[in-house]
Amino acid sequence: MLAAPRPDLLVTADEHIMSTSLARLEKFVTPQSEERASTFVERVKRLRGVLNWNIQTEYDKRFADARKHLGELDQQLDVLNRQRKAFTRTRQTAIDSYRGYVDTMRRERLRIKAAQEKVLALSARQGQVLELMAVNELTKRRDRLEEFRVKARFALADSYDRAGKAKIRKKDAQ
Image (cartoon, rainbow, N blue to C red):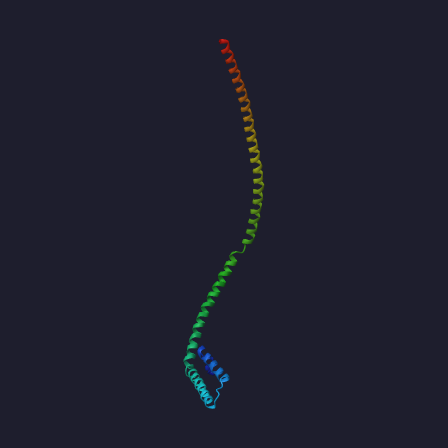
C-alpha cells in the first residue's frame, strides 16, 4: 500500500454498509418521472462522491493508524508466541517428569492386587475362626446351663425331700 495506495482497503464498516446501500438504491429504485430520476441519480452520485471524498482524504490518517495497529498486533503476537513457547516447555517438562512412573505404578498395582487377594483369604479364614470361637463359646454356655439345670433339679428335689421330712417330723411331734 506504500507503493500503490488502495483507499478502498481501509474503508470502515459504516462506509462499507453505506456503499452497499447506495449500490442497491442505484439498481432497484427507479423513479417514475424523468425529472425525479435525474434528481434521484444526482443525489445518489453526491452521496457516493461524499463517501469517496471521505475515504480519499482520510487515507493517510487511516493508513498511519493501520500501521500503528499492525505494530501493536505484532507486539501482542510476540507476547503470545513467548507464552506458547513457555507453555510448550512446561508441558514437555511435565510429560518428561512422569516418564518412568509407568513401571513403578504397574508394580504397585500388582502388589496391591496380591495384597487384596491375601486380605480376602485372611478375612475368610478369620471369619471361620470367629465362627468356630463363637460355636465353642455357645457350646460351653449350653453345657453350663445344662449343668445349672441339673443342679437346680437336684436342689428342688432336695428341697421337696426336706419339706416332706419336716412335715413328717411335725406330724410325729403332734
